[in-house]
Image (cartoon, rainbow, N blue to C red):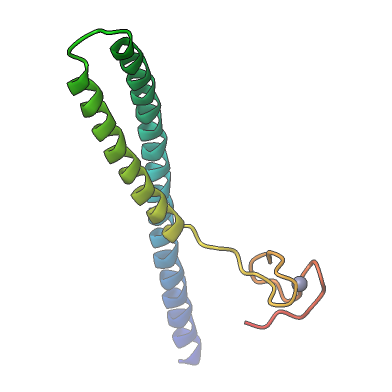
Length: 124
Ligand SMILES: [Zn+2]
């Protein structure tokens, strides 16, 4: 019976691991999507800034009726920047930080027993 129980335990173990993996790849997918979104928003910001520049210059040269459009673009750009900041914060939260050696602050490979930089034993 011990044998059967062991198989059961193993299956459970694999199940737990798979669950962990699915959750993790889900988060990675989210991060990828958010990075893509940040990229898109940054491009819009760049376009907005270009347009603001051009409109401001035309405004400076005396063209009339541009104030409202400049104002609208400034506001929309500020909103986009806030959105980018929020997305970047979320990305940072979901991106796991590598473990760091407590002695020399070098980044440690996952499940390292010794620090590759200073050779210190790594304790959890
Ligand atoms: Zn170290």
